[in-house]
Length: 637
Image 1 (cartoon, rainbow, N blue to C red):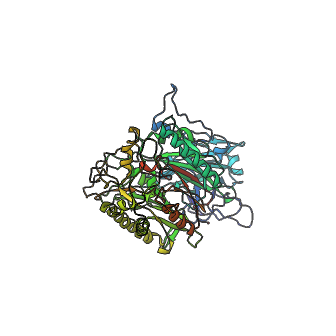
Image 2 (cartoon, rainbow, N blue to C red):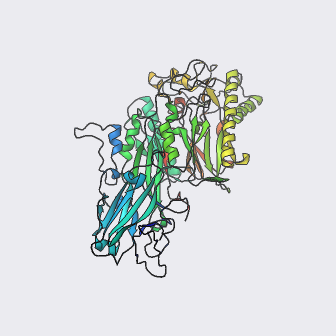
Image 3 (cartoon, rainbow, N blue to C red):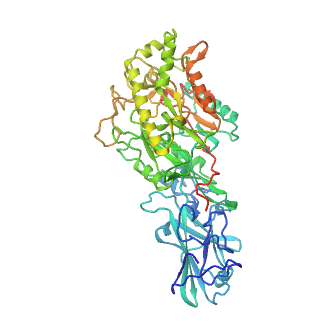
């Protein structure tokens, strides 16, 4: 029998013609991933003491809080520290906290040993590198009881067989220290030498969502207060709720209200972990990954508000002093949908993150190690040196498609954006205002014309740089995924350098400085408008590399259409463009709508100009989505 370790060296064989009557210890797990443990046949025996992509049992990291027992304040009513918040979850105690917690246990069974000698005893315990990362329970009289490594199974239990449950007490954080494998050993001691049988389980990886998974819930921050910005932001939330409902998402918005951090995309990355459940369907736990910005208090609300039944939170180590803060925002993490190229396959998709190729600055090592250690979505780095904020969502997205691959790449296209302006100029509209946005709360509307924009040498250089860097990133994506030019959706967009001198054009920094004092600290760079000099070169916090930074860094000039939210497989929410209006129509809105329509999407728009755009972000940066988790990440056995 697979996995049997006998002192005599003999290996027992299962009788497949009749119910198994084990003559040696036989521990079974859901090796074939059909959601049940087979103790009557041999479907779960082959490969039980190894783990491969095709066969091997899975267990969950039990880090949710099914009984809502985890406190957020101490006995004196003071907020708990970040470390204390993260320490509490279902795996931090030695109990099974109700039926929902029991459902998070991977099942094991011992095959009955009817001929066990009187006085025989059994033990079941985790051994090896994963021993400290797993906990076992045994079902006795219909209740789950902790089974300690020294705990014994009685002769009666050996003869009848028992049901066990096992949980991982943490996620895999560093595969160099623990790769998620747990070996469980069943040993019987009695008449003759002790004999044992092992099964190996893998801790389910924490996976990030991709856009082939349907949106089920939308998250957004809701600002308190009576000021003009608060009123404008709450209108944005109201408009967002209407768009979400119109897209067929039944759940109401989940709102963050405590800390006032409007960049809901950035302090959390929604993920999930799953194992085969009843009927082979995934038993899933949502896992919210807090950004490696522990000085960003909004991440605490994940523990305080969202952690609960089937929802856990992971907090990795904070970024180092030489690791650039903005690169650790989760808007700098997106996921390529599933694909296979050559001998490489990513059935759960593959993560992309931005880094400063010019300086070598990367997201926090703690986060990169965590993501890579899941062993499923090996992160791919793209160059965001040319962007002030430096997030991948500022220029690239992945769109569902009715094609063999199932998805396309969407990218911002500065050349197409410039051509829209040139066409308008050729047709005699150069005197039209570049932007149709009205005056905002204490902020004047931009006044430049199309002629002024096209006459700016810096503007031309900004978009030449953007186009070149986007094409270079596309080359990486095409090489890594096999995507062809025909599978790329090019969405008109424009960029402008984010420095004090943008040739008089209305970049986000200028608009913030023209507005109320409260807006000057409103951006995705921790309010640090001084983090660049007049030449736009990055200042402190960009890593320890001595390589030269990009000559300047850009942000979106027209609200970035690719920085929107996929609400359904056919419905896309983009930031309102506020471009030049010619013949009663916004030429950027018309162009963007047309491009997405050809790709199969109905596009709607939401105004984020004064609420997010001038803070160097868009509707995607200000929201987040929880998506469907019903597709298994594991191949069928």
